[in-house]
Image (cartoon, rainbow, N blue to C red; front, top):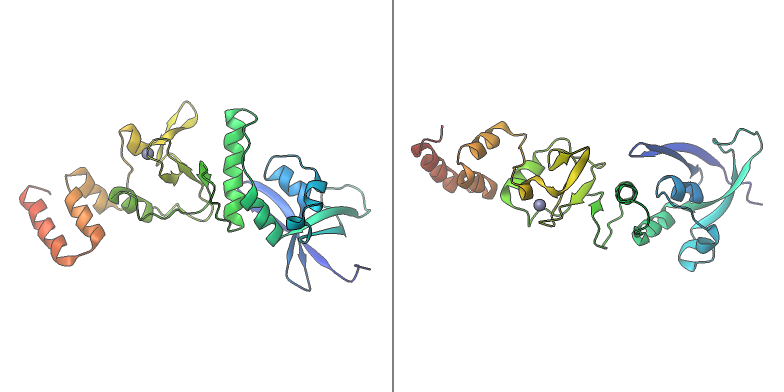
Length: 238
Ligand SMILES: [Zn+2]
């Protein structure tokens, strides 16, 4: 029984961690080796029983016998697997605990955010890192201009909440200052420097008192843009 199901082993990556999953040929469903996933991607040790005995999870779990790529022996390995839906729920419910050093906590949060991004999980718990682009509508105009023109932002981008303004920015040197090997907890705007826009014209305007013009460009009202452009030029903009 159960041997009529066949699986194909596939590799996948979350940031720089490569792991594997099984593709169930007949259904197209993915199955993830549960303890490996939690250990490798979420950096925790788990007790499988905690999930197996939980009605939320156990309907998404299955014991599968398979050729374990991590095992040196030829014999098959039996392990608990969880399908994509189960992993989704698990990532929705995962909270970072406060044990360990600040550095460990940071790594856990970052990988949780990356895993949430990989599985398309939007987490409603307030958290320091997220793995998806936040709603930008409440951001200041210069942030929107920089973020929407930043060609390095993609699905793997980790966004960190600024400790000061509370807005999320991509967690890299463009948006957070670097201090002694770490990135700061406050965004650049909150520490007195500005983000740099990839669009050279916008950056030029920003450097030369063109904030009002940038605002009109953002609102995209042609007449107002021309009006503001004339004003900027008359004030010696170029
Ligand atoms: Zn800030």
